[in-house]
Image (cartoon, rainbow, N blue to C red):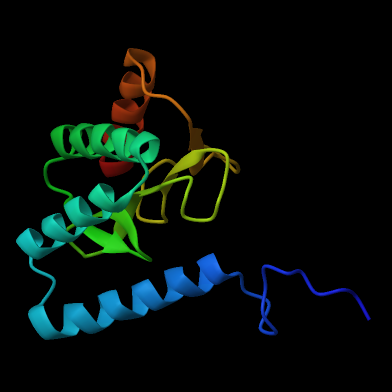
Length: 149
């Protein structure tokens, strides 16, 4: 019998993964009650960003500014406890996962199925993000613009 990982319980999920699932369940319950208004989504995203560690918060703030400036039609909301941006159909297009979420060494900028990044039979949908720079901002803006086109 293999040894149990000290970070997991009998169901195989880490404490961080269980917390993310609980956060998503709470989000779904809240959407049912209040209709997921854009203003509420924005406040939820800003609250999540404010809870992050300083390095992650700085990245998340820059991602938020870049996404909202590049694609103002996307609506901010939280998704599995992460800042995310949805299209008019309510589908997540892009999300930010801070490094502290699952104790990774980098934050992640990710794109979901609703993003139009298709490029042949293979294309990236997730990007490691460690530091913000003009080059990073330009690349993020290009990706977001492509995702919503």
